[in-house]
Image (spheres, rainbow, N blue to C red):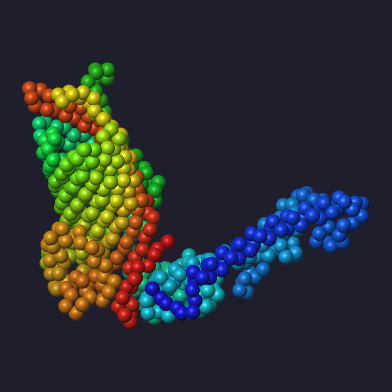
Length: 578
């Protein structure tokens, strides 16, 4: 975060607010003046009430619309600010004419211009390294540049050099600190500028999710204390690099859960295939194809038994169509296999039920998103979820999910486990949840049905520390040690490498500070869930069935990245995006 002295953007914004307050008092004054002139004209008619060419239109044709053209807005700091639309009536013409009332649009435009310049000044200050001293006066006196107005890489070095030479220092600072990823692609820039842009862009470009939507369903069967279940889900994600991802998930679980027991446990598995597309239309088409494939598969496995068309014929037709559909589907670029377990407990105290859940998962992620550099990621995560539920028929629930994930990414083309690590990654997620459930049961202990519907809201904060690993044996050994760290260690407070590491710090800490790419993003989400179930008892053995349909989604509400280390102090600071 750069610095400057003798300039307080907050106080300048207050000045803009005062200008708008003054502007707001001008129009009522002119409305009163217009009415006064019209009343006077009626009293002295047929004599002329005024000889002023500015006031005469109000007297001759009060309230009659007229095309007076656009109102020019005065220059602000020597820069033309454009024109406002022309007035619609004579009264408005009075307020917009050469009388003092014309100061109203001028003051409002000036206030908006001041705020815009303060916003850009703050953006540059936050994106610049801490030791950089910025010229606040020059930045404030310069109109904000169009950050998308950078030459194309194909324009050639001569055109790029001429463009850069024509910029003022304040304009150059805006492009360098706010759009380094565009500058690093250009030829023709001074070498020192290109080096700075490349370094700043390296730490800024950290892809993250912008929005997601997931829908799915599951079934669960109970036999005594044993629970068996399976399910599916479709997930669509929009990524910050402009791509879209569609994921098909199948999962299952087996667990123990005695009726009335305070503790339960389950083993879970999940398989996911993800396709990556450049635009939403392609992603939506694949999602529709996957849903049809799932429906055809269900017809293959469970053909109708009413005999109207013949179960065998339906299954054969579904198999043919399923085969055609699968042939035209592209291969997924991400394949995920996950196995894990969870233990949960809850104790009811009247209408209040506190609970807690612990979970651990092990995953293997195979990626061909970059066909030239396929990778395999080993991932371990650990979750703690305390919760509190209150109520009976109508319940309110509050909870926090704290998740920590440790990942090691390996080069799939290199089979040597001692030299093929390319990245280590720490992901820490904190999700706060609030929801309400309406439901109940009908029947007794031996036979009954149940149902519930839940709506919930969430706020999630995700911190990702991404550390590239080189071929040096010491770095490879440190990365292998990272993967073997205790799983609960990933739940500790995020280790943000914002300060220079101590002289005796481990190698991973030093690498995280010097080359670690760090993002911190926040999401707001909502979810709904419908459950229907039944139970019965045969010879003392309870049987149960439960079906669930769920949907959830979230969207980005805040994002920032950890900027490059300051060349003088070594400190790093978070830079807001957007």
